[in-house]
Amino acid sequence: MKKIGFLSFGHWTPSPQSATRSAADALLQSIDLAVAAEELGADGAYFRVHHFARQLSSPFALLAAVGARTRSIEIGTGVIDMRYENPLYMAEDAGAADLISGGRLQLGISRGSPEQVIEGWRYFGYQPAEGETDADMARRHTEALLDVLRGEGFAQPNPQPMFPNPPGLLRLEPFSAGLRERIWWGAGSNATAVWAAQLGMNLQSSTLKDDETGEPFHIQQAKQIRAYRAAWRDAGHARAPRVSVSRSIFALVDERDRAYFGNSGREGDQIGFLDEKTRAIFGRSYAAEPDVLIEQLARDEAIAEADTLLLTVPNQLGVDYNAHVIEAILTQIAPALGWR
Image (cartoon, rainbow, N blue to C red; front, side, top):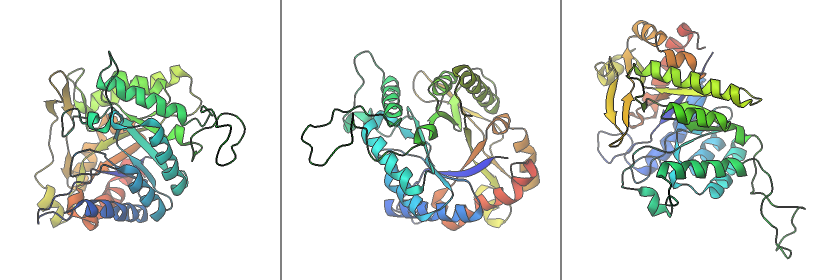
């Protein structure tokens, strides 16, 4: 059995060919798609965060709205770039969104990917400390977030406060119990997956990772997941971890599917560079008739290793079509593979 959700980047463009022509469209349609996905029986509604782009960028207002409109579906991110975040402010926003949703928040965070502007985090008021890289800064912000999410008091109370304080040091409010165990790290390398396990974070592995061995993407990703789980066991955490992978998967079941994606299933991985030093491997997309798709997905080692599958959706094709894409996977693909 697997949890199956969707992952939306929330792209929008004023083009007449797009069903998502404004930021308002992207936000409101994201809420509607989460509602539709819940009705179809999907397990998760996840959203990507990008700054300085015509995409979703301010996740907590969206997550709170989705939480208020739904009842059972997990809501989350995949991922928030921690180079841009104030950990304490983030903990308050995340706590509020989690309480509104009744404890359904699954918060995916990471160092982030190459952004739209050069060193965009500087515009948000952050810069690495002396001797740090921006990746180091993201991990430092992450550790601060994890620390305050434990809910322990750390701030010295004012002896003459405006309102009475509880005894002892004060913690951030609102505090949502259990959220600390629902933080996920989006790992691009085996080393950061191991680091995430040591800190007790769940693992998100996307459709790309550092090309560390030259092997096919799904094999490298499966090895990353196994390394993560081994590090989790070595760390001695009491609970079981969760692992998600993301895939672009389209079952060609009608003429719309064939028109949109009939020629888009890449048979192989792609190689690229995230920066001048980082060679990355990008996993293939899947688009085929259901019987063919079932055979292809059965050979994906990383999907087999994960407990959660996030379907990347083409949000600019509209809510109704994306609900159709999700439904086709849930009803025609997942049962045949033992995911349902």
